[in-house]
Image 1 (cartoon, rainbow, N blue to C red):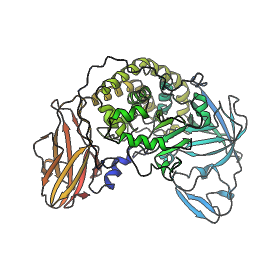
Image 2 (cartoon, rainbow, N blue to C red):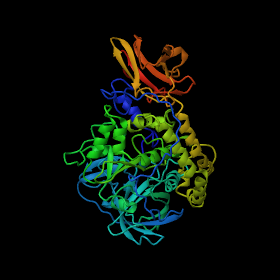
Image 3 (cartoon, rainbow, N blue to C red):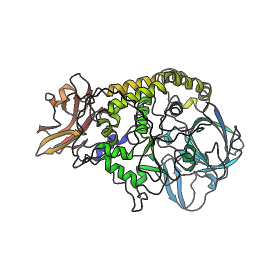
Image 4 (cartoon, one colour):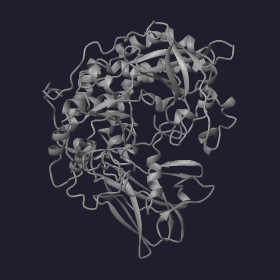
Length: 602
């Protein structure tokens, strides 16, 4: 799960601005020094061919992959086993307070790691990762007092009151062939079913495999005489990667499987390998290695090819990606509305000995209409539809190629009509409800539902649950709308001998329909107590500029300024820049804030 202000706001969008010498220039990555010829607007031609043509490079589809596919509730009993610690080491003295100490602090009562100790681990990146020993028993008979270790999992969900956990079974124990149980609370999803609904729907979609999911109730016995206590509803999601994951799918053993942490096919210094192909020291800041072939040079070569503007885009794409898999992932992701997939929330599979990369679905609790959930973080205006992926050289390159937008549009229509249908959604939701509703109406879940609208928590849950039946149609509408407006860009600014120069030329101007684009520049004084771009704060608002991406705004008095550039076509379809800034406690979409003179970030 990714970090928004709640879990999935792209902090990289905002922090990239602060990291640049002039706020706004370059996106997640700075523009290439020599970008070469840029894609030109291409009209959307008629598309007559089928979007998917089976080929030898398609992923093998394994039968029997979902042995517990029917909706049911697994009861998992976890009994605490004494977990002593001693001596010097890294210890959690409090929430996110990881210290190197001579002996265990009071948060390890009696020098024991407890579940309360585990729940203090709210910082995934520090040196502390406490876990406890447990015995696991499942009511389906698969687990019978199996020894295991239990620890926290997730990123921003660690901050929630109700936590998510990983239970790793000791060698020799397995539940339906899985030795790692990933038990997710999905605390920011009011319905608590978005992730499971997405993966269950994707079971029927060809050319990429889904993940196993199962509703689980946990009963935890702390060993203090109080007996098993309910921990509420969780959703187990199959672990992405590993030997068993590959075997279940009939995929090549010892292949690479990556979980994408911060990677969108732009070059980054962390993407380095040793001469023998082993991952460099910072490689997993970008791509977490879930299955390791020992050679990761192919992903470096793929990034180099995608960013080599001296060769046709199709050359690199055809070598490193499978069209059926790519189209399926992109179309399905658009229909499910998993917009936070620019640089995270997906996986990649690279079969051992080959160069091709296959997209894998991962993490959908921020999809399926989550942006419209009451109280959800506000998404930027560009963050629904193909513009979501425009900062990636892979997606931008593919969608800029003549004919590919029509191909994607046809793929979206086919997957919607055949697989992600309203009937399929209703059938799954109807099967979940008798399981989920009584669990959420009881402790501990009922008091911790992310209900921020009107009515009781369960009334709000019921309304949001009902709304799930409409969100795929809405996401398809978002996708089609995005084909009608100019693509977004990054703003940059510099001080040229006392004059402000603005540039919005990266990525290059592109309209999916090939329509001309004009730009409205607005420069306003940042005045405390006045709304952003209020009429009486406007310092510069020239007539719209057609066909230009650089403007010399001239000399302006010293002070702080808000700058916004809006792209529009003759039909009034508009787009803002990728950038955003904070002003008077509010997020201003598509704008940057500059201190003049100098054109430095506010």
